Length: 215
Image 1 (cartoon, rainbow, N blue to C red):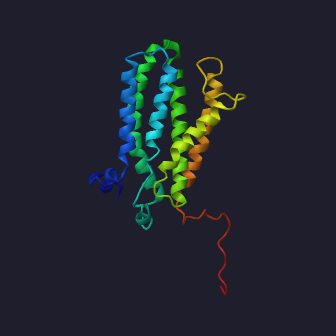
Image 2 (cartoon, rainbow, N blue to C red):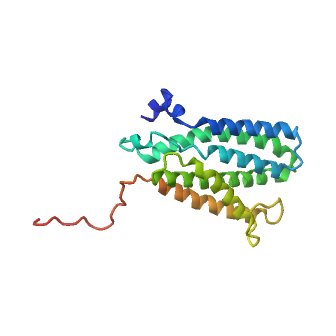
Image 3 (cartoon, rainbow, N blue to C red):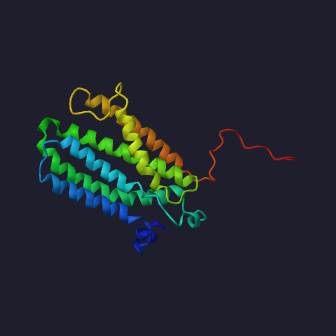
């Protein structure tokens, strides 16, 4: 069924492509405006990561969600197909962006910068996708509209806690900050996976099955 959805183009046609197209255009416009200036690589990469995250917040919007609830195809697989389409745009773009900016960093720090900023982007994606998935679970066919304010509120929260700085420059706090980002990534991923459970599913009981009356 998944292959048929992709082969016949139904999945792509059902996706909200406007946010992704707008994101690609915004990324291109930002890079053109910078005109090759890479002196503030960390700040620029964070802005570009934010644009990518905002564009993919609509990946789980699906006007046919109610109809597909009766499908034998699991909720998790339907969600992962949509998220996979979003990642097919994000991953090549982010790779190209890193390839453009990271050469301006010292050679010994490039992998740490690239890894740390990628963790930040992955955490932001996991947060908004978890919000969208829970929105879908509670009946919102188009939860993408709530992902933008959620992401902006999440970023404001990260900068409002001086005791645990998150958006730091490269230096002594870099590793500690990205351990926190990794914790957010793991927690948000767990919430996302939980939201993908079919509503009718039940956790398997660990004890023996109940005995039938009169048996």
